[in-house]
Image (cartoon, rainbow, N blue to C red; front, top):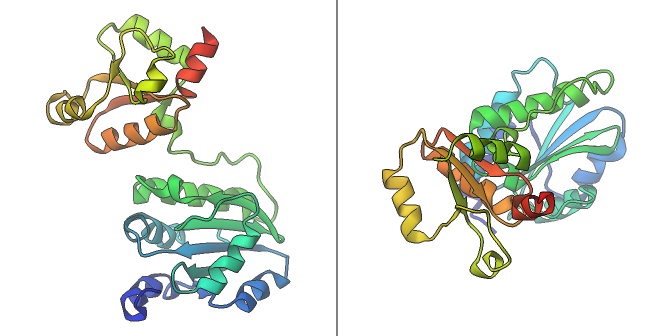
Length: 250
């Protein structure tokens, strides 16, 4: 358990703007006794992405015109009983913190997991949250509201990648897979990223260079793309579906 004095300011960031703390199983069950309306449950954490992104985004999202009717939070590592009980309501999702769950009439309608928070800016996560509110927290569910997906702009489909490579022979194609995966095949002209090449890219490559990153299924390449985007690369995309999608298309 974390030092209560250490985590108190992290709790205060949310309780001062209206979040109710859940500290016991009973607190969690009481939240869901009345299944009418909308409730947001935030699993708080001491990690950097909670401090730098999740909590500030939650606070900023409260400026939205449409909001959940109740706001609640449990602190992972301290409110152990409440956290475990809350996660029992997060059916279909593995435990992660920080994370955000939105319920409507007692049903989980949207989940934002830790991997969707890491690497985001406060602005983009705030847009994610407010788009969720706009869709699910009005008088009725508004299916016409597009949920904001900050990852969409970081991905390129196989067809789009083929067209880009054909149009621009200078496009860099980076392979972030393991050697045993590369043995199965690779995209022609791609370069395996090792530590030496990684350092060279960050230090010396022009930030406007066209880059496509791929792995086997698209998860690792998306993380690499997010990192390089944070380093200032403007025209970098992750291959959606990875080499598996590329080879299937072939």
